[in-house]
Amino acid sequence: MGCFPCFDSREQEKFNPEKENDDPKQGQPTVSSNISRFSSGGDRVKSRSNGGSKRNYQVTGMGLNFRLESFIGEGGFGRVYKGRLESTSQVVAIKQLDRNGLQGNREFLVEVLMLSFLHHQNLVNLIGYCADGDQRLLVYEFMPLGSLEDHLHDLPPDKEPLDWNTRMKIAAGAAKGLEYLHDKANPPVIYRDFKSSNILLDEGFHPKLSDFGLAKLGPVGDKSHVSTRVMGTYGYCAPEYAMTGQLTVKSDVYSFGVVLLELITGRKAIDSSRPHGEQNLVTWARPLFNNRRKFSKLADPLLQGRYPMRGLYQALAVASMCIQEQAAARPLIGDVVTALSYLANQAYDSNAPGHGSRGSGDDRGVRVLKNDGGGASGPRWGELEGSEKETPQEKPPGC
Image (cartoon, rainbow, N blue to C red):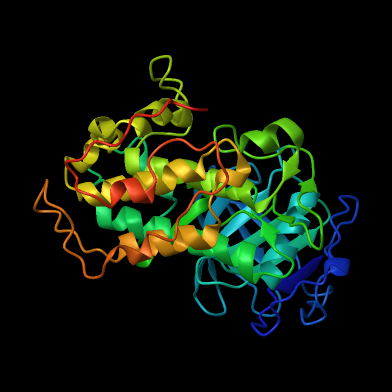
């Protein structure tokens, strides 16, 4: 068995593409020499049944020792358990590869390689990983508040919905994670699976991106895109990527716009339980962007009107530009970060429904979002900076 601690050097921020090896036939990843390999003689994955459905694993060696305490979820990679490192008592999340699942060795290798070299406060931290025969385990820091999806959709009656301030904080933090991947990583990384279930929440609703098994290194030099097989989740994929397989950072921006719409509206990206015409979030929202009188229909009813009207307009402007059908018409994620950071810093008193935000600052933080690509529809910043009583000029629905 090979067990490795996660690469922990924060000094190396540049990828070496030649080291990336996603050959699914290889059982273990080729990673930086800074990762020390555990001695194979003393490391074993042990499983035992407690007589019920719960199964405990113990992985021993060099401090990467944990036992499973509870099943907490399941995704394309496999089951996720809550566990504890016996050496430090740190609570962790352990993903166990489902050998019959949607993802396999290739995604396991990509996940390890990406998170070995990528470090940011808005990316989940990989603590370690293990491989023994066809057994694959990934060990992460535990996110106590679960996923964004858990706090937006199908809420139980006793669960409080997210307030406006928290929603904008999550949106800004998630955008910063994407900005790191697109603008700081070298070469850039295209996440390719940005969705609400992949945004995990730490204490204080601090968002972190997770699940990097579908991530791809972005285009470098004079290349404009990366050609790859179409992967991702229906409802979040950019239309040009779904049709051509040509992947760019603007594909992630589209997916981000869908998640921002989820945060604003409380609706799922795809919801087959809704009436025909409302099942696809983007298709339903686009016509409403063109009439300010209908903007309030886009706000999550669970907010009960407790949001700043001007902040709603501006958040909708960001979302509408992110989900433009033409990739060139979408903003760069860095501009999105600037706009949403401004909105997140505007304190709103949730006990005063119907009143605007009284946060400090002016509109300069949001004016950076421009749309020079043509073919865009929906609200723009210039239209939202005037009086709230003004009605924007009607435009055709567009795409």
